[in-house]
Amino acid sequence: MSSPSVVAVSGNPRAGSRTLGAARAAAERLAALTSTDPATPADVEVVDLATLAGELLAPAHPAADAALARVAAADVALVATPVYKASYTGLLKAFLDLYGPDGLAGVVAVPLVVSGNPAHALAGEVHLRPVLVELGAVVPARSLTLTEAQLADLDPALDAWLARAAAPLRRALGHAPAAEPAASAEPAAALAGATR
Image (cartoon, rainbow, N blue to C red; front, side, top):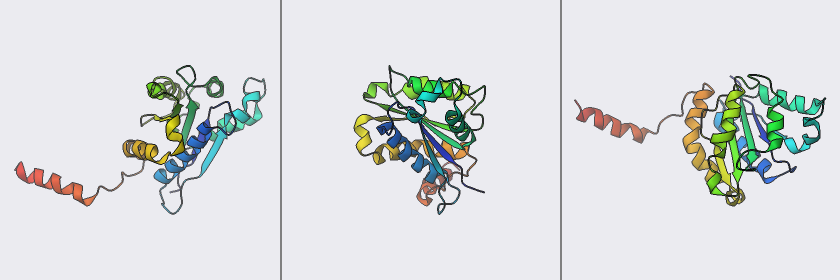
């Protein structure tokens, strides 16, 4: 069985943004997590929508169409946006609007939101998750929310999120859950013996 492909999409209107960097880092972690062979991590592609902005509202958009196809063909799509007006960017909306009904059917999606204020922690759940589900994507884990302060050192935030998200993501991709540590079986065995 080959490893799944991971595509990260950055909806920040600035090319080469910190949102893009966070999306790339998170996608690489997802590639390692979802790989069926630890020696061969999943392929990671990155789509920076800032480079496609001039095409998105044009009658013809061949580069955007190619990006849409890559995201729709991915096993995992990490969809990243900074918070704009308490939601996701218009650039990301324009890109997602190019999909037809169920355009992301079968894709496991991960919303990623970068915010300057922790008060926007639910922007991914309230705004981005519904549009991904409407497009047919499966969103098995809570959104990954990062504050600007966390961007300088992403590993602790990614570790904390993956501690909760890894199991549902692996299940959604049809992978067996990671083996439980042997120590966790002892309390269960003791409890089973106590209830007999």
